[in-house]
Structure formats: structure tokens, C-alpha cells
Image (cartoon, rainbow, N blue to C red):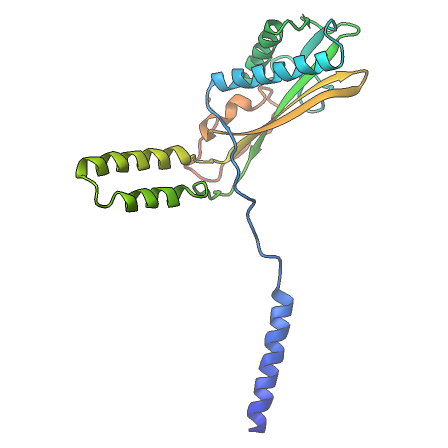
Length: 235
């Protein structure tokens, strides 16, 4: 009995020490949220229009309606312009789209840097995630689908077919594959080395399209894929 008591005591002490040493914060995901995915040149234009609208409103607010702006693509730091042939396919297209939208808003837009002009800098960063990230449907989707099936359990077959098709459409709409790549697009408007406007946006992109956002320069860092199923940059 004494030996058993001793063994139990030591076991409890060991378990206590084990629990005490191994207790770490439990990993928890963020609350459910949504994030847009860039999949077409039209999406680039939508972003350009939104940015031009914000810049126009900022100029109105600061009473700078007659002040010219100059749009500059940057690589790295905000004040470091991209070298010739260094910008990405997205960078060139977004520059043209943003200038077009600014002109349409009536914002005086210069073709080159001028004294007294406000500089609009923008850059894009490509983010690669090696891990396969999990994703679930939005909260309530499954409940809605299940409730619909339960309510229609005694409905005519034709109505059930329509309801099932609608449920599949809802599920397909709610599901978007995240992929391995994201981009961060930052736009700043600077005057006398001070930010008077700045915005950053994060988007998903298709894995096959990551090269559209990579710098064209040979100095651009190449991302090596470890999974043969992932796409590589076109030759």
C-alpha cells in the first residue's frame, strides 16, 4: 500500500509538471472575414477608380483642387522610382488606369514631375505562403442550406430539384480557393516629404498569375516552388 501510494504521488507530481511545462497558448483563427481576389484587368481598373476617387476627395478637402499630381511607380521605398523595364505587368497597367481615372475626375495630372506637384507613389508586394491554408464557408451557410432542405422535405420532386440546385449555387458562390499568393498594394500622396494620403489594400490572386505582379528586373527575387503542382513563372 505504501509503495502504491508513493507511485501514485510521483505520477501525479510528474503529470502536474508535464502539464505545467507543456501548456502553451492554444492556436486560434481570426474571426470570419472576407477578402477580394484579383482575377481580371477589370479588377485593376476598379481599384484605380476607387483610388482616384479617394485622391480627388482628399484634394477637395485640403483645398488643393488646382494643384497638379504626378503618378510614379516605385520599387522598394516610396521615393525610389522603378528603373527602366523593372516594373511589373500590373505596375504598367495600373499606372495607365490610375492616370486615366484621375483625368476623368478632372484632377490636374502631370506627365512628369514638376515643382510644386503632388507625387502619387504606388507599389505592389507579392506575398507567398508555403502552407496549404484551410478555408471554410461563411458562418450560417450550412445552417441555411440544412434548414431549406428540412422545410422542403415533403415538397414535390420538381421543387426539390430547384431547391437543391439553388443550394449548390450558394455553396459554390461562398467557396473561393485561397491559393498560395496574396498582394499588398500601397498608394501614397506626398507633399514636401509628408504623407497627405495613404491607403493599402490586400488581395488574393491566382497562383498562375503571380508573375504579373513580379518585377521584371533580373534582380527580382525568384520564388522557388517545392510542390510540383504549383505553377511556375512563364518562360
